[in-house]
Length: 72
Image 1 (cartoon, rainbow, N blue to C red):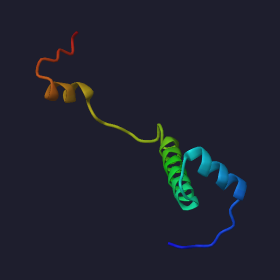
Image 2 (image 1 turned 180 degrees about the vertical axis):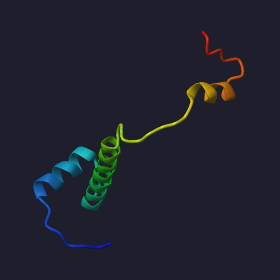
Image 3 (image 1 turned 45 degrees about the horizontal axis):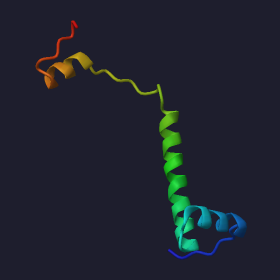
Image 4 (image 1 turned 90 degrees about the vertical axis):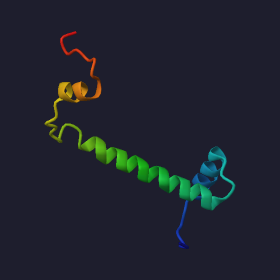
């Protein structure tokens, strides 16, 4: 997708040089992908301790490991 936006040239040059990107387009796309990854991770961290889990680890272990002894 082509678009025209104003970008700080100094910041773009720094990202391109530090990241070793051959083109400005590569630098922008990599930066956007990294930002999307970080925002998704932040959203997941925000859900921390808000989800309820009703599983039984001992039961799952017994099913996977026939020699597992929960009394050990």
